[in-house]
Image (cartoon, rainbow, N blue to C red):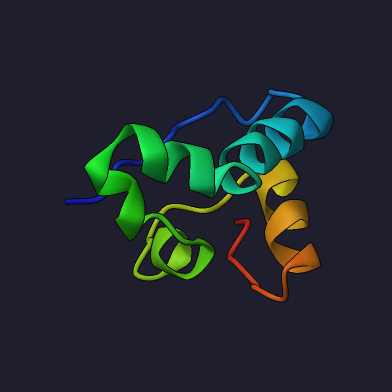
Length: 71
């Protein structure tokens, strides 16, 4: 089961970038607090998604060599 964070298209790129960064830069802490955290990865979070990604999230993923659809 995937959990998806939905944000408004009008949310700022900076805010969504920082939110995405906060999640994926803290995977080890998330794993320590929740057993399902072991399943969290950039690759897992971006594969099979049909909804477009916000530009802020796409920016973070691109920095980690993962391209996502934004429209």
